[in-house]
Image (cartoon, rainbow, N blue to C red; front, side, top):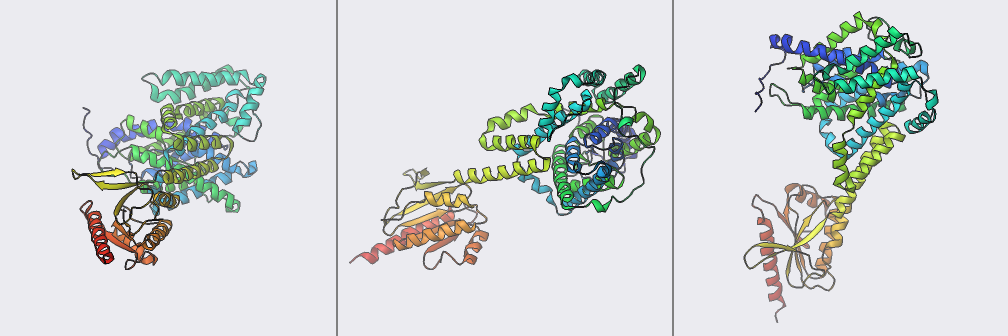
Length: 563
């Protein structure tokens, strides 16, 4: 058994904050240097913007999160989506478009939090998220192959660019490739050792020193792409003249991506003081973090699975580890901007490639693959769409396909069973009769969703009334809080058919809300065609009462027919 966690009161145990959270914040800041630089490069903007994000986003977000150990940091998925969103802007406007996009992402996330939309994450299927995250990882790897080898491919999407890259192996810069492979070798080697936490930092420093010492002029540095300014920028409102429907839509999509990943972090980390996690409050916190990032020339940020796991592993105890990480990063930006500019772009590419490879969960892929076609199709469709379309379109396509498959599978899983009581008193199920028996009671149990197509599937399985005389039908609807319009129409049509045969329909086990729906619909006249029996806390009580009523009704009909 592990040692029990000691409850922490965030903001009051200052001794624990200094002893645990401040050192954890330093580790977070050091790791955020390569991650922030690489994410900004992936987004297609000055890498220093990733460092600005790593200053303000952890501070603003950590003060508000309910999941106290969550680390709000740059992520490859949000950076990739943001980079795609601003790719159409002229290069002179791209940075300003990014800042405006990030501010809008913050507004959307904050709105999601205020509206308590954290609970809506349950409607994004696991197969869609698996396909999306795998696709993002694959795109990330392919996108970073170009700076890794020192060649810029052409093509409308990552697949075509990858093909062009492979076709021009002879144009790779050998020195650039060698430095990048060296960084990858360091990452692979150290991550299997007890120094794994420092792997990214060492892989950043050693190849950079090698390039400087050996004078490898063909290796592109951050300073060659975009010089690193000294200090932090002043907060400023982005250029609102770039605002348009396309940017707003892209910001909403990036916000959804950040929100879903953040909710995943919220669900995976518990608070040491025992307070519950609130996904909606975490959405609000990430909204504030992104709004601050947009005002301070940053890129999108969100709950990071990797950095949160690192935060826990290095002994963080409260939200103050995140705040301390932002403060440490501020010190790095103010004191060492010149050193940051000497980092080779191929090293950043190596870091992102390894992050992409590590994000591919083969166990989850196998699990979804073996589950069945209903899970496999949305995953594959989302994965392929992520490779050839924009990330927002890919997620939308995957969700749409998952919804369609859910509707189809729900309709196909509807089944109607006949219930009979055996000589031993037990209730048994069997296939319902094809034609209703005359002057007898038929009890039907319904399984599956009865909305939309499911209601029509239910109608197809109901016993035929044609040729029956004075049938009594009991349909159990217990546990259904709401009845769709289609189901009400199906029940109304069936009750009329039963009435024309001289019979009676009984709907048993209805909830108060379902019974009220029937009453408001103006159909299924209880005085003429149907009896409605509400559910109570005793299972089978209303059905038994319906059977007794049907038996009494049949007996009365028999007496009425006697000469």
